[in-house]
Length: 121
Length: 110
Image (cartoon, rainbow over all chains, first blue to last red; front, side, top):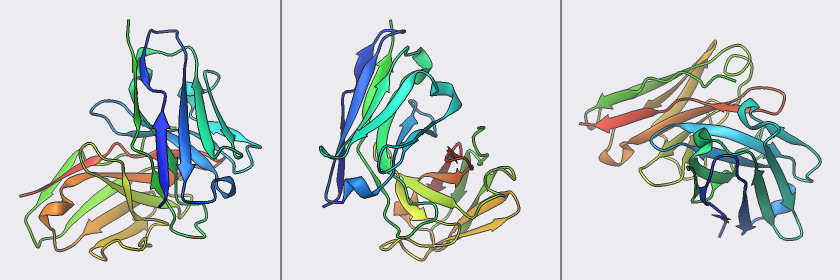
């Protein structure tokens, strides 16, 4: 079945770095653009980044631009998020997601279970 | 890239209907028919319940319906059931390959 499994979360000090991974299975990963979405504790969802299916272009929310890098390895069916210069307000559960397309050719939409990143001294 | 505006909470009794609003700008909600709605139960990942303003994903009850007028989208849940109690988030395409979510609405079924 369709599955996204994140890993790599943990506790890191302010200014530190962390790399999240997301392993995809059950669908043709290389055919779809992929997203990272985060949710701070007790707060709402925030779109973080998107990468096109072939990895040719990346897009970011302003608050992470220049600090975070989204990438993918289609040969390994894996999505990544490299997070540098982490701040306390980056603390959140990070979800890997295949959001419904724009425009939507199907209703395919899938999220991982999330991985918690805590930035604290 | 400001979050879309949703009411913090709504409530309703079983079998009643409720509507959750999602207000943005002409650069996001008003500019595109690419508004989705997600349901999130505590500790779970979000689940798509409406996409492209009015469309149902397969497997989602038709008790959920969506609409849009100007810069405001709405999600209506009819025939409320206990299992509908959850947080609901709108999400809109915001142009230039960016997306924006709403702040979320907690639905309580009384």
